[in-house]
Length: 442
Image (cartoon, rainbow, N blue to C red; front, side, top):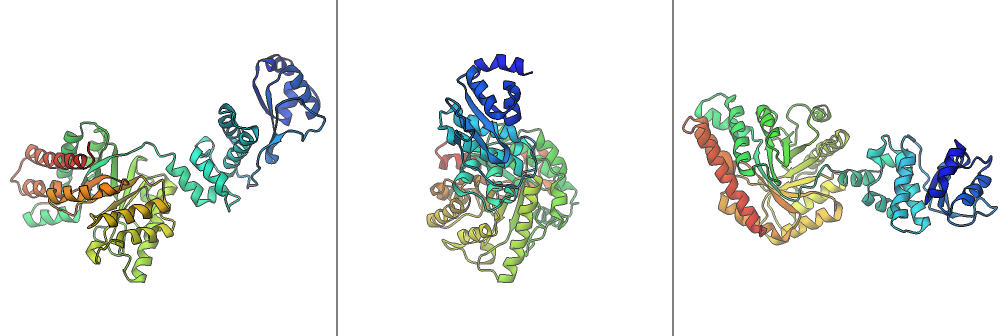
C-alpha cells in the first residue's frame, strides 16, 4: 500500500491525513519521519489531522519539531457521533485552501466543521452552512453539544430550506367554520365542502399555470381530496392549518399532541397556525397561547416542517403602530422563529416599518410576511397591498373569502355549476395577483 501511495505523492498539491494515514502513505514508522519522507517526494501542502487536537499544516521544510507548523483555532465540544467527521473537516479546509485563504484560516474552518459533525447526530445533512459557520466563529456557543444550540440550529434550518420563495400569492381555502355556516344556511350536507375545495384548487391552478410564486392553503378536515389535486398542479407552496377554528386560547384541531399529527405530513407542506393574539391580552391568556405556539414550533422543528404563524390582533383589541410588532417581539423572546408570518393589513407605513424591524432584529433568516384578507373587498385589498411597499419582507398574500365567498354561496345553494364556480374564483384570484404585482412594479 505504501509503495503505491508513494508513487502518487509527487502529483499532489494537497495531502491530508491522520497520523496513521501519513505513516501509511510514507512507509515510515513514526509521524515526523513520515512527514519528512512525504516532503522529500512533493512540495505539496501537508495537513496532519490529530483528532481532538485539531490539525497542523506544513507548507515548507519539515523541522525536527512536530509542532512547528501552522495551526488553526480549536473548538472543545462533546463528541456525539464521529460519522462523517473527516469529510466535514475536509469541506472546511478546502473552502479556505481553494480560495487562497491563509492556512491558519483554512485550518480553523476545518476544525470548526469537524466539531459540528461530531457534535450532531447525522452525517452530511448536519455539516454547517457557510452562514452558520460564520456565526459560530464570531459568536461561539455556550453549548459543548452544538446540537443543543438553538441559535445555530435555527440558522442551519433556515439556510438549508428546500427552495427560495421570493413571491407568494396563495388562495386560502382552509376555512372550515365559514363554509359549514353556509352549508347550514342553505341546508346542504357538510360533505359538499370537499367537492367545493377541489373546485378552488382547479381555479388556483387555472391562474398559476405551473408558474412560480403561487400557492394554496388547504385544511385536512375538508380538503383531503383537494390536497391530492394540488399535488399535481406544481404549486410553489402548500400550507395547511392546525388550529381549532375560532379557538382563543389556541387549541389544535385534531389532537393536542401536535407532533404525532405533523409527522405524517408531506415534508414540503407548511404548517399554518392562526392565533388570536394581542399584546395587551390578560397575562394568563397570553402565557397559555405562548406555550401552545412554543410547543408547535418545537414540534415543527423536530419533524422538519416549515411553520407559518398567523396573528390576528384586531378582533380583540385596538391596532396602533406598535401592536403587531410588540406581539411579534414577545413571541420571538420565547424562541419562536416561524418561517413565515401571516398578518392583517396595517393602517400606517409606520406600523409596517415597526413590524419589519422586529423581524429583522430577531430573525434575519425569516422567509417573510404574507398578507391576509379578512374578507375585504378587492379594491380595499389593493390599497392594503400598496401600503406594504415600505416593507420588503412582505412577499405576497394568502387570501380566501374575498376570492371564494360568492362562489361558495352560489355553488353550495345550487345556483352555480362547477365551471361557473371555477371561473368566478379564478377571475377574482387573478385580479388579486395582478393587483399585487402592480404594487411591486411587476
